[in-house]
Amino acid sequence: MAPRTVLLTGASEGIGRAMAWVFAREGHDLVLTARDGERLDELSAALAARHPVQTWTVVQDLAERDADARLHAAVADLGVEVDILVNNAGYGLHGEFLDRDLDAQLGIVDVNLRTLVGLSHRYGAEMRRRGRGRILNVASTVAFLPGPMMSVYFASKVFVYRFTESLRAELKGSGVSVTCLCPGMTEAKFQERAGMDGIRLARLDMASAESVAEAAYAGTMAGRGVVLPGFRNKLAPLAERFMPRAAMRAIIQGLMTKT
Image 1: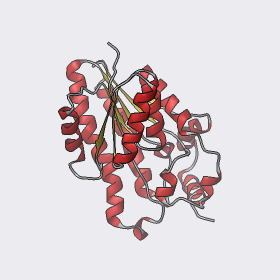
Image 2 (image 1 turned 30 degrees about the vertical axis):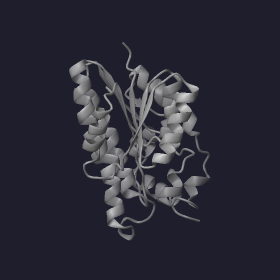
Image 3 (image 1 turned 120 degrees about the horizontal axis):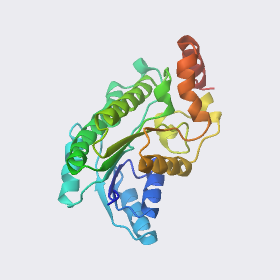
Image 4 (image 1 turned 120 degrees about the vertical axis):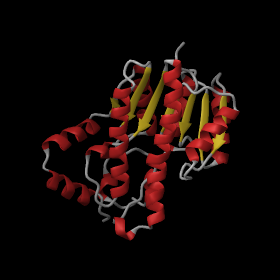
């Protein structure tokens, strides 16, 4: 039987919300989680009204140190078996590292890394025992680039990319596929929350969350290792290989500067 039930973090907006619609359209039941319960309930009702799927919501702040355990327990209480784990939740903060609040930056580590690793371990073990399942971890094209002005966020996505690559190798032949999504600039509230208004990078054309979600779904279901939506985003790994690091740092710092 093809994997069916999806646990999707960061489901209330942006790429996560768009992925919820794609998975529902394709007949997958969904457990949706985020901090905003009202938006989750609205999305859940809309999905169920439009598509013949079951939806559940779990309100959880993934910055809490035990968020992965809390979420895992809440899903177990629903009696739901997760076939596809989508670690989509994440955030960043613009500005020089030493000028930003330390607790807020450690929150990036908790959401982008700690909870992702915890959920991957808990559900990956269950999937391996069953001999089937899929994990999708959302990184970014910044995984291939240095990140002045968003150092913790950029570094977190390097971790997600390398962790996913390594986990994929460990689970080869187990029946569990592991995919890393690396989108570039995408139309979402991420930039607003990160304080990225006015930076040069924001002038570039952004992909729609819907187009990224379609690519993510196709790549996950095909069992691909890495999904880079759009031609321009496919250039990022090439820049890492062929461009001098000093030049890359200068370019990124210029693009991340507010005008």
